[in-house]
Image (cartoon, rainbow over all chains, first blue to last red; front, side, top):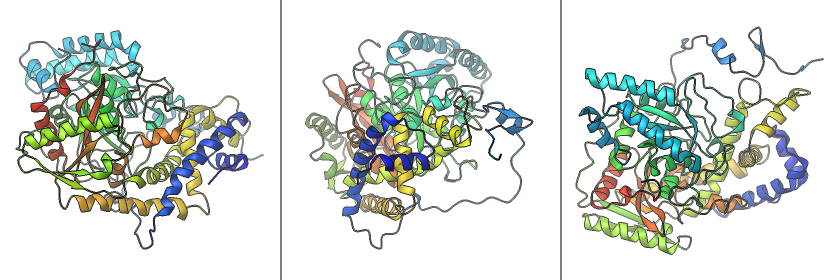
Length: 95
Length: 484
């Protein structure tokens, strides 16, 4: 699998990553090499092999549906780039 | 006193040969003297350390001390530390002061350890050489032109250069074992779920596991006993009692069945590293162990499988870094998309961006089955290999890394070559098994690590096998020239 410039641009957009124009050829080359390594997987027939999502095949542990968190909004917002009146500020989304 | 193990330091503190404050000052002085050439620590917490040392001294005086009370340690900068900068080796978190402590940090704090600072690491733990850190490469104390390994390269260099008796590490594909091998120290990656991941910045959640890095298996046993245990704050934490790892260190190795996977001794292995490993196996034979050749036929598939699973999970985990709630935000974003893209584009380094993109691609519409589902199936086959092997043997041994430490810059331009240097460690993470690396000799002046892999929750047996070897060898006591 070889990726071209527009593939890289599309993936970078999906990942919400700004990639400098000048760096795209290098990323295309590196990512293609990595995908080539990954292609080795296709040599193995895995028909009927169950997927392994958890190393110990454990399920999700559940807890009782009760409130356990305390309000730490002020603490957490103290490290935010921009807040106002308890809200995180971002550029205008809706005109 | 910097050449003493934790066990020795702990006895000296109790015997009042010196105080924790004196010990802490001695290590802080070494950090100040040697860190500029190693770049192993990114944050120093001298004042915190001295305060912690004084309260450790009070505990020793009033009889409430535990074995680790008063022992200086360094935390890998992936662990959140309340009120102390936690960068994960990234510009993205260069301004991040964690609002809470990781569970491992709390446990080590409560045991009375004294944190000297935070260790440098590959950015978001993605790397095998510690060269992807935003704060620059770490140098290997055995040879300053060599890498220390990664991603816990700062932690390994700290212990090897005797800047602290121990450090914490994390291991997603070999990040404790490979730097331990390359720096000539002892490190253990426990079974997945043994140590809480809460407050440990996530890279690949189904693979990440924390563990101790120290000078000896006995010291690792002490540390792991404190770090391990059930934690309701980590949904994958395993609710099983923690054994006393020190109690079984001296068990006889008579009749211990050691499996040598033929795939770990093939073409890719450096001949001189192979010779050192053969020597270590001979030593185990002399200790009464029985050597059995085994096969792990899917070993070669572990690197490709890993480079789907880990990037896929990383692309999801790292989506939280968006420039909105914490961490780096770009200047003057023109709209929300620009805020996300530039904050992430400017905040992450090249290797992190590569992995996020590979993961994004593998999870994108139309590719999921060919990549992620396929990799999860291969993961099953890789883990079945180990299951079969452990029907016949008690532990598996082989080299930790196919070569000794490579030179700084040697593999940086070629990600795939760098990835292949983790060929012997990655399968252990995919299977979720415990593994450790212990010093077994040298090629030239660069150390070689012996890897010991165990069955699930068999950490005590790994530590026992490592300890018995360290009782009859002195590789783990060697100190790099210039740091004596």
